[in-house]
Amino acid sequence: MKRILLAVGLLLVLGAGALGVTIWFAVSATTGPRIGPDRPGKALVLIDLQEDYTGPNARQPYPESAQLISSANQLMAAARAGGWQVFLVRVMAPDDWFHKLLTGGMVVAGTKGAELDARLARPPGFIEIVKIKGDAFSIPALEAKLDERQVGTLYIAGIDADHCVKATVGGARNRGYAVNVVREGIAVNGGKGLDKIVQGYEARGAVMKTLAQAASELEATVAHSD
Image 1 (tube, rainbow, N blue to C red):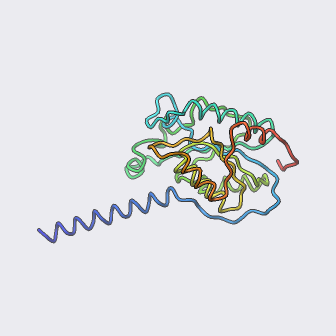
Image 2: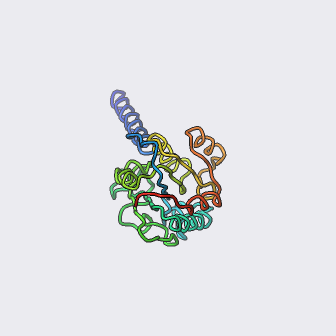
């Protein structure tokens, strides 16, 4: 019996360890080829503003959801005025027991909760990126579209500031993008203060911008590739 209990205990420890490693990889920043220094394009990347998180019937609601959606829509209007590409990124968990365990049953493929918040604008020509991991750069299509448009500067907003936004900021900086994070466009759930998270962004070389600053910069046009 003692051996059986030890074996069961070992399996539980190994299982927990494997789950921990899986979660760590899911929320870590990715790496990739560094971009060249002279890419004039800008792009707006909005992350995980989905029904399960920000919608009226969210299963994991963010108290700042109305502000998040308002900020996102203002940023998209500014990007459209400047002629810059908008990326709407959402996370979608495969419909299986393991990913339901990881996500608590939220943002599962085929459910309304996995859809983008219905209040979000869909500007002409926006590109939707669907990911499984935290870092939006884990999907090669994002990098490919940025390359096509010679984008060197990103404006990032969305949720969660301490997870998917942080991972995407890290993935972008690992590739050499200039990264601006919009303060009114991010939020965190779980009690961790934004100030400490922001310090982490800045330590990676990202720049914090107010909504007004980011909108003004996105509205500005320069010669860029379509």
